[in-house]
Image (cartoon, rainbow, N blue to C red; front, side, top):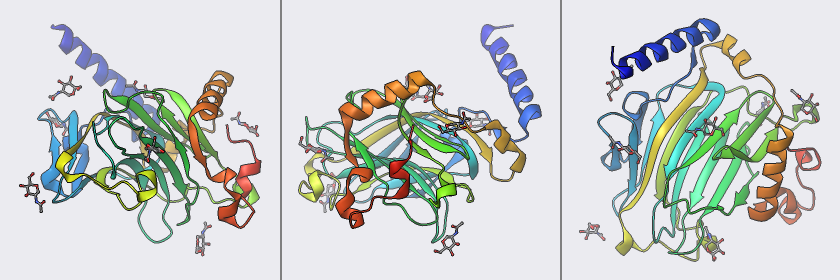
Amino acid sequence: MANTDRMHLVAAALLVLVLLDSCSLLLVHANFGNDTVASWGAQNVVISPDGQNLTLTLNNQTGCRIDSINQFMFGSIEMQIKLVQGNSAGTVTSYYMSSDGTHHDEIDFEFLGNSTGQPYVIHTNVFANGTGNREQQFYPWFDPSSSFHNYTIHWNPSQIVWSIDGTPIRVFRNYENLGVPFPRRQAMKAYSSIWNGEDWATQGGRVKIDWSSAPFVASYTHLGLRACLSSDVQCVSAFPATNLTSDQQTAMANIRSSYMMYDYCKDATRFNGVVPLECSQPQN
Ligand SMILES: *[C@@H]1O[C@H](CO)[C@@H](O)[C@H](O)[C@H]1NC(C)=O
Ligand SMILES: *[C@@H]1O[C@H](CO)[C@@H](O)[C@H](O)[C@H]1NC(C)=O
Ligand SMILES: *[C@@H]1O[C@H](CO)[C@@H](O)[C@H](O)[C@H]1NC(C)=O
Ligand SMILES: *[C@@H]1O[C@H](CO)[C@@H](O)[C@H](O)[C@H]1NC(C)=O
Ligand SMILES: *[C@@H]1O[C@H](CO)[C@@H](O)[C@H](O)[C@H]1NC(C)=O
Ligand SMILES: *[C@@H]1O[C@H](CO)[C@@H](O)[C@H](O)[C@H]1NC(C)=O
Ligand SMILES: *[C@@H]1O[C@H](CO)[C@@H](O)[C@H](O)[C@H]1NC(C)=O
């Protein structure tokens, strides 16, 4: 038996164990071809024949978006992304989870482009029951356009953790006991998109897209949907309440002290002097 066949057998055996153990927990490095669908600008979505790689293009005709076919309740949604190179000013590349409807829930990673040589901004936000306004933004400590980096959203009933290359950069804990809405009632799909955000994205909207630099191409690989199908109410036990380890807390604190460039919790003016309740609670 060839080694690759052996590996396939082992992988199949592991998958069976996982399925027996926790019903429809998806333990997959999902396939863009099988597990996602282009929902906007399909002509600008390119998936490699093996389904492992994806490019999303923004040109002067349109941007584009893909949606996961399944809906999830809790899980770790992981993606490796290489952002638009060179002059990406005015472009927004995103990777997020969202439910539908007016009182929707959403968990965001967005990447705000910039002029050549100027830093991207990594924008994070969370919406619960239709309300967001919880932005935190970071400068990357690496060049996000020269190689792939791992962006992960880990979502369980007690907290949401945004990580880059395994280092947590933000935690949003469940403080429903204090009356702070937390997204845990609505199933979400995973989405990726690229679009024209020149009205606000770059230096507050002052720098527009230079169409002579088009097309703008973001590359994706290694889609990981280790998540519960929304139809499986038992599956949530696979994502129990957790806290960061002390090493993770230290790593996160270091990133935040050096690279965080906007924090809604420090922007009292915006909230008429009173920042949201969770801002005075531990978020790690
Ligand atoms: C997923 O797509 C690949 C080709 O892109 C195909 O070989 C494979 O059989 C598909 N898997 C499933 C479960 O449909
Ligand atoms: C997918 O992307 C990876 C990383 O860039 C690359 O090594 C691999 O050759 C690509 N595969 C296909 C089929 O394009
Ligand atoms: C859009 O881009 C295409 C390809 O680069 C170019 O031929 C065309 O003139 C552009 N159209 C507009 C309206 O700028
Ligand atoms: C969500 O918001 C709507 C409208 O503001 C409200 O009626 C509903 O009670 C809220 N649901 C939860 C779970 O907070
Ligand atoms: C991506 O990061 C997550 C945790 O943040 C980790 O579980 C996963 O193994 C990483 N994936 C890769 C391909 O490195
Ligand atoms: C773009 O670069 C400017 C100048 O370095 C910086 O102020 C800004 O935060 C950067 N990012 C965005 C998305 O505007
Ligand atoms: C996480 O930390 C909070 C507050 O510090 C604590 O109340 C909770 O029990 C911890 N949860 C776990 C799973 O350790």
